[in-house]
Image (cartoon, rainbow, N blue to C red; front, side):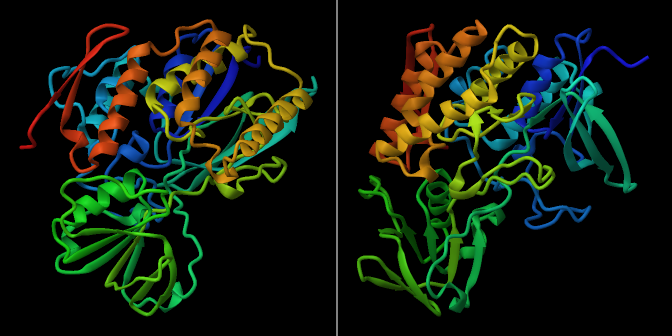
Length: 433
């Protein structure tokens, strides 16, 4: 007899996949779930490897983690609401290995391992129509070591494969003439290789700033090239010089948009990533240009098929707690407590919101950067799912952290935060070791 359980496929064993699995596994009588992870470890981008291009199985390296990375948000607001960090007294901005262990502990605590297929790469996700008229999913996956392929049927697909794997490389006139070493931040691991070199880093978001600060300890000169309306504030820039974006490249000579020039030995693109879903059937009409996935309702649901979900689309957010809310929202959709509009209405809602944001002057490629819009989003889907949203103290710490970062991006990680209650927190400056 066929199982009466809803068969759920979760693709990706990073934070989002683990959080979704934790919530779906709370109802074993209703849901049968399988989490597919292509590597031999869970943790997604938080799994550090010295490899930069392909892993031992010949698959593209998923993680963009570099050796010395510390979080860019305090752990006090990063932590998943129902699983606090054990060390509440340590530093707020922790090394990536602390997060990796936290995720291992999370999976162990919620007994997720029985649901996880490691070393299993998803090759194809194909929608079909069941005899009852519902969309079902034929998923073909391969056990990587043995190369054995299997195809199974699922009722729900939740994509948690992340988007820190395929780097976005903008077109720059003359870039093909550059004869120094050139990488995307996805391939960056350690700063020592830049000793004595003149390095250009393009992009001044989180990774660009972090890598610039690291490389500056070894390089002769670092040009931090960006198109932000104002220069970033820092009291101790050292060898870092901020420049406008790159106009063109001629060999090792870079010309910036203000007409200034520099001789460059090494070039690092810190220019973001592309959303890629190489396993999705061509039947899924998905657009991923301009760093924007569409058509997606509420940053989660493929508008045309209600049982296909996309985790991890919003950027400039507090991700771990967001996944905690999103996962419960999906669960309420599956159990019928959240009623979705028709596909036509979902698509119209998506298009209306996109137009509204673009009319406000937000470029399409920046729509995913939620920033101040994130709080209303959490409140909206939490209310729909009838679960708690973020307590006010999370936003207060987030805003304070951004303020301190804007004052001096070289020292903002030296602050230590403590949550007192839902409204209040303390902060202290700690001298770096």
